[in-house]
Image (cartoon, rainbow, N blue to C red; front, top):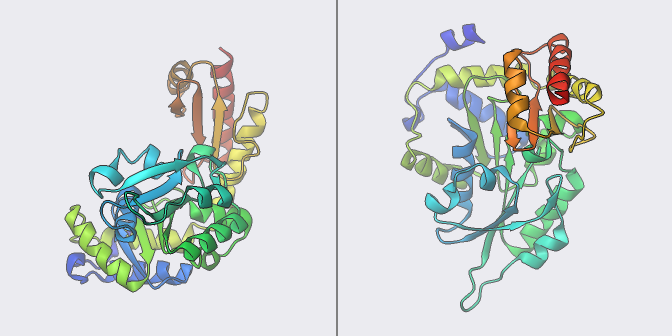
Length: 320
């Protein structure tokens, strides 16, 4: 990947002059069967831009109460996009269509109508849970029936596709806008993409510029991202196997995302700060998701052998 970065052609992507960026965008749009794509620095920005072009300023969006865009977006939908959000409970990231239908607000006197629905696949705060394709398909039909936009935060949708054997085009056909990350499981150093129809993506380029996301020389990052897309999707299954192995070793602990479907393990502990510190002393990184919850994520840079060693360290830290 470093060789690809060094050899990348570069240009001013704000003027659509960067060959490597255009190549990445065309390839990812084709993979998902969508009209167009746009390269951005981060998934957070990509989600914000996507929802901004789906909803008029002052509009309302519905989302799972534990969705990344609401739980980890630092209020960007409200403060930057000027959108109101309402939350719906989901089970492992899967929204119930009947609950969504009941929550929809039509236009009317003194009522702010619902403009869009946001889903997330895989669902990060549910431990990388895969939202079943039939659930997403039902939500897609519901959104079209009511004339509202449907956005998917697909930062880890590559994991969902590999875990279930679902084609990327099957996912792409369901959504008005979709974001994907290349800097998580795929291992690129930076970046995400927003996908949609040509008109929405063109408007999204203006919003990206307003947020300071006009790229110069972005080809070095786009080339690495395209290399990751071409070479690192199928191997995600290895990361799923590593997470499953860690979960097996920690099986006596209260695991809240059993069975582990992809590359994330969530474990309930008495004191996440103490566990985090004990693991760090042994060179193992875990994330404190809550005072009594840790998150363990596997990826391409940690071998199965090292994951098993880490599982022993984590088990000992929890037991202390």
